[in-house]
Image 1 (cartoon, rainbow, N blue to C red):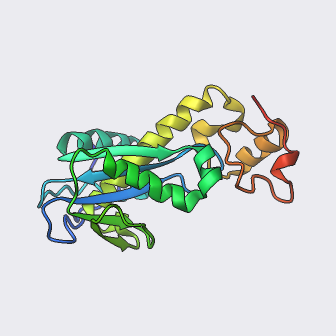
Image 2 (image 1 turned 180 degrees about the vertical axis):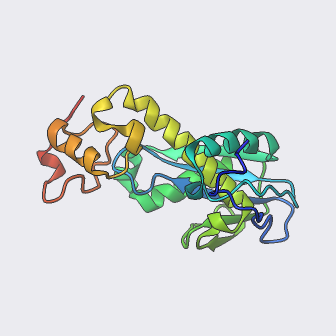
Length: 215
């Protein structure tokens, strides 16, 4: 469990429910701004009234605490699911659409139809006929969204650590595919891989077509 000495963990629990419905699912994504790797999304349903002050927005937590909380969430959620959209899908449909598609996939795989959906951010597309609400900074306000942010982040980070073994030159084990200077320098020197998002501007003032394919 996370240490109480971690100042990033708040003492005040997040809100447990927005709609008043028994089966309310919270959704969030991870990796939207990355240059490489899939975008991941998670969906979480807790028992109504569930609370845990350690569960917070994934961005406010240390990696070790996210990993511990991910295990806890999987144990204590009524339902959870994690899904993703690949770099090829992102290039085909764009990152916003794929972020939502990954969330739809996560909801679909829950094994239960939710009565209400709450989503981090300000944009979503209808899932079946289920009512929903987008909430700006929802991962810092509602427990299920924060839990979804943790599951998506941990799953994506673990995926990037795995593919780092195939291409250690990009330092994905450190930057997780985000556009750091080291990542861009590696693209400039080594080219791009099948894991890179070709629809993104990978290097400033350089067309992706000019970059070598690093197999």
